[in-house]
Image 1 (cartoon, rainbow, N blue to C red):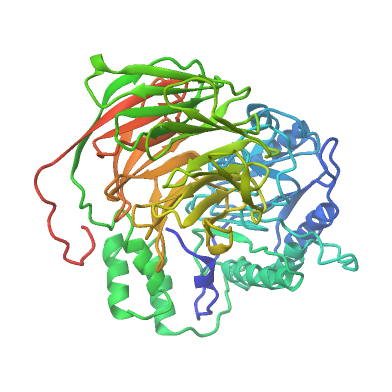
Image 2 (cartoon, helix red, strand yellow):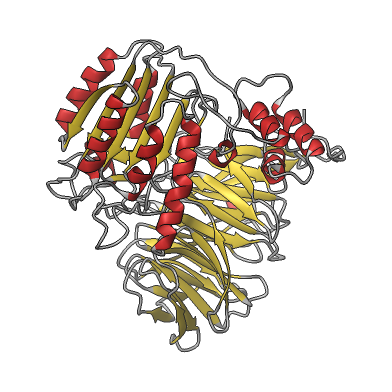
Length: 631
């Protein structure tokens, strides 16, 4: 059961009897690295935790300072052998870490600086699979993990799958995991040059609150989180620890918790949020709470639960999504797709350094390859049609974008100036300009007729993954690795609006035809639909980073592509998943788009597989909504 820590910052008079047989802690500090940047406070952090857990909380502590990978695994295996069912177990790590967008990894002293993504996964430690899962397999009463490994990704992998900071962690029964900084944030070692404290900003906030075994653990973590945010803000830095908990809010290490008073709404909310609350189904309990406290402090959270599965009512009646045809010709991964406005043509961009134009929209025997566009020297990441279908624009890792006639030939314009991969390019609705996004952190607007740069935008602090013109052409919509989606005035580049899309990179963003809603794909495996007011609708279910998400022409559905064996179709109004598009012989979907009539989906599957999928719908109307949650 999801539980935000802010809900746990209110005291209550309760106690919980202790049941653990033994308290055990495995505490690791890594400050000296063979290839990575050394860290100043991590060993001090580890020693501080070791003292508190041993002296104040009565834990049997196993400390480990600057271990390499083999030493860590040997010592951790020995620690696992000591755990008995019913024990309380703490795991503390302070050092470097990284995330591939789905999993978080810890780096020991011998971690490599240069590595492929696969190599880095093999030479670092998976927090979830190799640490927490192994601990939970020993059936402890509870697990408490502190991970101070958010000091930015220190590696060079040359891959688009590397994300900044740490990814979100799933909520697991009787487990509390806290990261020193949220994903896409850097954890501060100190507040400035004159700060000589022996601990990092997070550790110095948490340690004093852990010393009292009668103080509820969730309260201690929550108060430390708020304190860290305030300390970081005092030096104009953004750092808010991320907490994932399914530990009873009444838990304390002594079993004799000391609480104060809270109001009735707070009591009711903590009660229904408990994983043990089974008096009514998950949708009904939030609906009832909202009826009782329509303007309460938890009303927005209750509404968010009710607007997402399993509580949302599925109104769309998609009957099936079935394979229709393959388009064969590319020899490497396909990273971008676009239907022409009429639906007669499909364009694809590939790592084989080419783009292809396909004739589609008729029977499989009557369509196929039309044009091959050759000239880029590195993989292509996107391709988009002009509004009149006469041209396409391609974006490439060779740091250029190119404008081509759709019928083929040499490029009409080569747009040069970016100093990093050009990740995306799009035409303005009138076809007179092209906008490009780049891993150099800039967005640039170009005149199609001359190929000259009109102006640039450089407000993002990290790589820009996509950029689109709004349907009316008055806005530019960007998605960036800095975790934000931004709207700019398309005539001069002034910032209009910022959406904090999440704690990990926003990989892609687009708006619907009315520009009232913004759809964001994220490396955390989710997509979100944002409107001007209210909480976003979350599309959750993928098990890997998302590459893109696209609205259907009528705005009623969304298709997503991800690195988890599938593309998926969703109800855009309530977030319910409707269908999977899955090639069992592949390893993920790099891109997916709807045809202009909404009856087909083109999907670029892993391994140069380009597929068309046909959608069919029920002819009957969905039942009218009653305002009650789905049963």
